[in-house]
Image (spheres, rainbow, N blue to C red):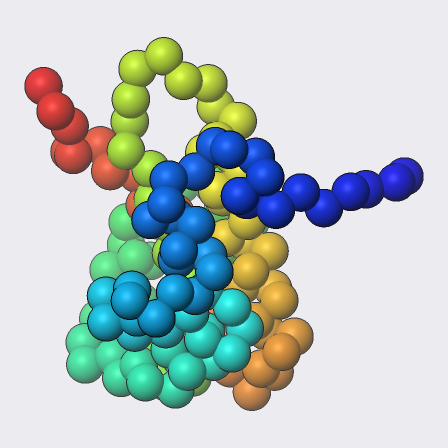
Amino acid sequence: MKAKYISYQDTHSFSKLVLDYVNDDAQLKSFYSFRPDMDGLKKAVDARNFKGNRAELVEVLNQQYQNVKTNKSVKHNISILANENTFTVTTGHQLNLFTGPLYFIYKIVTTINLALELKIAYPDKNFVPIYWMATEDHDF
């Protein structure tokens, strides 16, 4: 299959702000800590220090999932959250009207794939994909 790269700018579909962000404009750097690339993600992981109680987190998640049919991957991901070298890759979705399911499926698949890519890049660390459904976040 032949593929052709089209720059964000050439699509004429993005605001100047988005284009400046994608192009790493210096004026925007004070608004974020890490670039959304593998180097930026490595820096973000190195800067993280989870202060919560990991054992309690795992215990509560296991209780919440005890009556839910899950596969081995879900159980494994919950259990490794107890490890200090485990990080989450999180995405969420706010419910809205008049959109189909493809966008949130794409977000979930992208999050899972990023967690897998990070594990390959940093094999001494674990990455758990998390999907958060923002059902309480609405504009009604």
